Image (cartoon, rainbow, N blue to C red):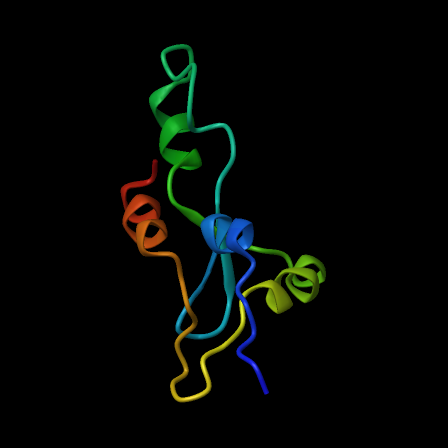
Length: 85
């Protein structure tokens, strides 16, 4: 059976935690930051969990490796998500 291809747009937008939760970056943290207060900017940075209803849609887009419990994630995704950018 051929390998299942990863949806490249999903691999750039989402990542899967070690516990299997689908994570995404929070919105409105990319531009026009001067008018946003510091507390608001801190609230927006980082990752959030995708809701349970949407997880059912997102999970098939990022296939699980057969040998380990980790999931294939695009190389640049983890570094950019940790910085909160």
